Image: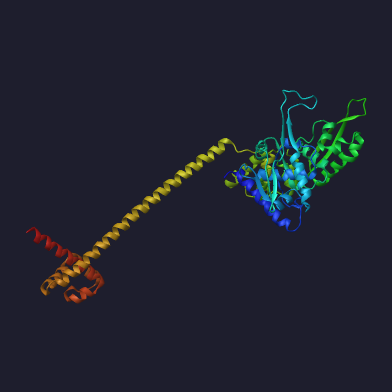
Length: 466
């Protein structure tokens, strides 16, 4: 399983766990203590004339699609979970159906036609429904997303992090629309000059109905900016420009946008790299102050540079060179842009290969020693078994012999070099040793009966040869 699949599964499991905890308490997703969101393709900011509830519905649907491991013909989840994701608190199912219908009517239109000229037959233009068939039954909701959009949802290229925790808090459609459009410019801090008519189109009917700018500003623009600054993770301001130096008619706007200096906002400033955020927080214990520093420097401290600092710190940790505050060491690696030199990486690899070869040699040597020891033990066991058999056979030979033969066996063993040596070691007098004493002594009987076996064997072999 890839890291990406693991991260998505973790996000899905976390959102379900949060839902179970918060739904029972009657708490909306906007009050969540943890981030819930996904990496949204920039193409999905160009959605117009869509109410706030319908926008939340699309967010919830695309969040579910983004977390699934595989593309599916449809997506089926518990209705209460879906409503919680879109912060739909009402029990009015008639209204919910109307919201679904509104979302089904919405289109995403993609074109390469510049804003300052009319379209031509050579220009690219695509119009796609945002969500397809939707059905509700027995407390569950099933929905389809047009196949043409699935790739853009699941594997976005140019994208930004969309937090359902934040967007579900908006109550003004204009605030949500402007927030969507400025997010891709967060790292630049400033949008291009945007035609006023285009900004009006972003916010839909509330924008186009106010023909005079001062009324558009009073009734739509200013309330939207205030709500964005109050409820979201960014600070937003705007500037205006007139048609010409001699004109008083405002025809263009541009927005200045900055992340708020809070640890929560860093989750979004990490371009939705939730796994990267969790690594900084859980593995290295980055503090709120350090997160704020990361947020302030995101224009330079990109995802790649942060990952590079993480790898460098892990590399030095494995070498035992980080003895205090891994978080502080990582921040210094990030600030000074430390990188692991290729030569050092190769050196470590060579040393590891050498150590592995030495370990393999030591393992082979130990296995060879064990093999020899096992072989010796097997031979010893074999010898002991053979001697035991010889002793048993010797006992049978001695028991079956007549008195004269038994005396000869005793006399012969006592006079043999092995018998003399053993008797001397045991400090026994051979001249007074009886047959009963010989057989009753454990050490003597073992050697004596083996002697009987060998003598009997020798006699049998001699008889057979003659």
